[in-house]
Length: 241
Image 1 (cartoon, rainbow, N blue to C red):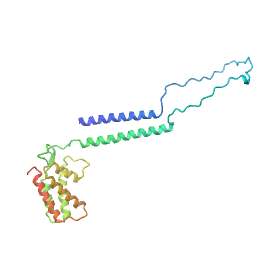
Image 2: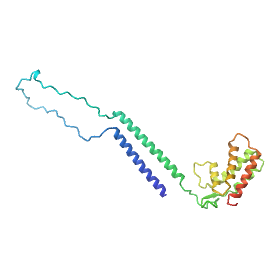
Image 3: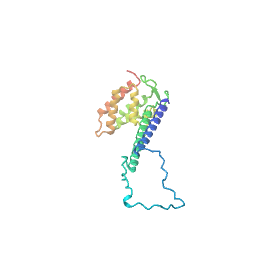
Image 4: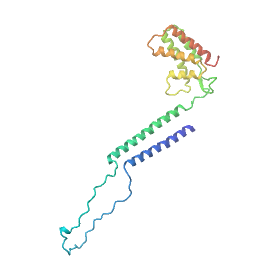
């Protein structure tokens, strides 16, 4: 609970900083800001009484020469339309980075979330070397798996049925399953939480994948290897030597 709140607080701070950086970048692209108010008009107000000139206008030779008007200098800033486009690009990039960061933090928090399943849920036992982490009772599933390998079914069907028995046992308990786990991945994870011989587990999983997804037909030797793996798992999953 505390870790989730801390993660949410950090995410809020990061998002706020990113939005402020986007605003600052957009303001910089628009050029310097000036708070000087516009000057008042210097156009003289016409008087009620017209002024009659008392002297003759100066001749053309006596006119005061006009000072040359300097052309406006380029301030060096970007055109307004280009500044607008650049500002939009910066804001979109910052928001995209914020979304990516939020998704990453959410996935990390979900992976680290503890299991909500009680330690002594029905059909769940605790492994000898795995603390209080719940593990389903695999004995009935292993019995069904060994039986599926010995009924004389085609090798492909027998091996697939043996592994599916373990998947069903793990799925019924639902001990610590992550929504993204496939049944095969979850059954493998459950077996790894027990004291089952890891080589036997890996061999059975390899035989199952070859039978389920491989192009070549499994043989009776593959069925025998799967039977040996099931027997080894039965002997070791509860911590027996």
